[in-house]
Length: 107
Image 1 (cartoon, rainbow, N blue to C red):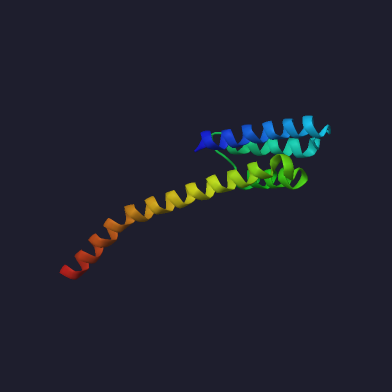
Image 2: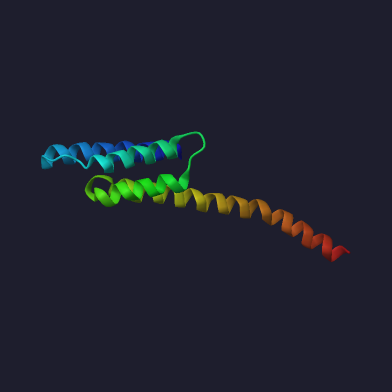
């Protein structure tokens, strides 16, 4: 999943560069700083998810044309990962629950 998050950030940076070039304007430096901080916070060995998402949201709200798609993409990836994790935990818990029900029936 980290590879997909990295690719989302790379795409966001490319969109910002292209936007600046074709619209002949300077991208808000504060938005760029928040974007880079979000990337750093998410891609480190122990990510700080809350701060990273907040920084990415700020970047996207300041420069929606540049960072809005990255914000949406990263949120989608994280939600998908959370759903996959929850499904795996539920699947792992089901045999244990069945075993405890079977043991209760036998007693």
